Length: 309
Image 1 (cartoon, rainbow, N blue to C red):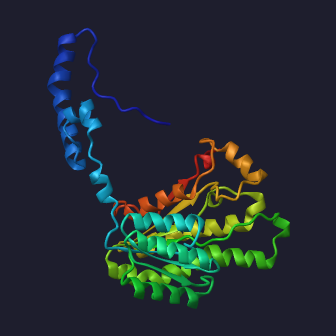
Image 2 (spheres, rainbow, N blue to C red; image 1 turned 60 degrees about the horizontal axis):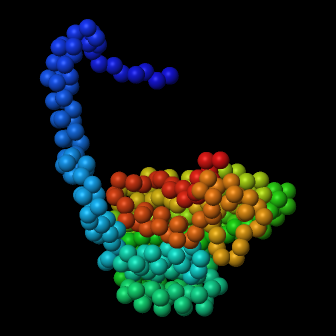
Image 3 (spheres, rainbow, N blue to C red; image 1 turned 90 degrees about the vertical axis):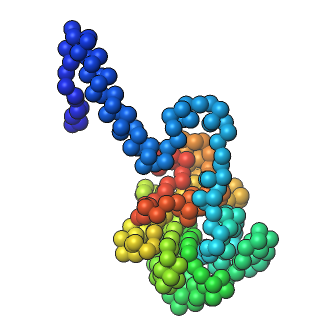
């Protein structure tokens, strides 16, 4: 039950007293509070807030400069194609040097490496099976040696499949957890010394709305992503204050190979009436890579509102 706070009651039959109370007491307090709030958040004067001409001529340079990653280096796991590729390019466009891992997409990795360099940043690709601790550690060290530093780690590598619960095999269960949960853990653990050395490291995990909602034909997938979501929160506490740890939870993302019947059904249920794109996810990752230093342990859901249904 919510209680509404009330100030002193002024009789309706005493307009002069009411006017005195409002003008002599309330107005000065409001002015002081407004001034203090604006001072704290660097607000422009009220006249600027209300002036249409000021809104039209607003300078976007402050936003673009605050999102600059020039002088920093990022690692994207599973970066050769699809969502990983979009994230690698977005980070490079913001000025970061980018290293990424891949497992089987050699041709796509070589192409992306060239695209990154064409943007004027350093780039490096390492083939690695991140399901194994030693391989994950070696990949982190190789990319750090090439780039010279490490400021941002994006754990994108993942596996997805639909299987009826009773039909999930031991191998499918182990593979799902190794890819979606163990690999991010191995990479993050190996990167900690380099992120701390950078002075203000960031780790960004790719979870899923499957971490928030249980889908009966994706039990092993949902379990792995829920584990990663909770790992995000645990790591945020364990690694603070030097390293921020956050996550992005995509919803239905169109990857260019069409949507099956179940995916079309989910798209139609999405409040924004479309599937997401890799760029939608990349934009969210870029936000977490550039946001203020007071955000950690949080999951940014990018699903067009699907998790609200």
